[in-house]
Length: 143
Image: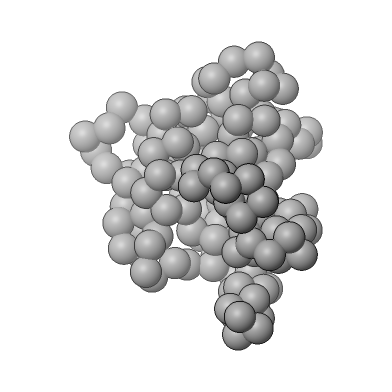
């Protein structure tokens, strides 16, 4: 989560919402992809930290299926990112702060655990939640 927080701080420095994400290999020792929100910098509405980290991990592994991998992200994923997690077959999602307004991994919606879908990753929430939330609160307070 500390690596994801570092990525989130990069997003804040670039003027974007401070969310960072890291995809770890199945053994948890290798970083396959990292990302932070780049919507402002790129003008791309899909440039969320999770999507970018997943894209980079897929490029690193040479395959779209990230079976066995873990995505660590500072903020609960939205519906788009939750869908990307299901589609990429990530096995585990670890997140920090809950997103009561747009979260899709347990708070507002629970896309990743919907039994109608063909893949349901494990969810671990609340890791360094205070640190993750503080970064977001400071960013929005400054705006």
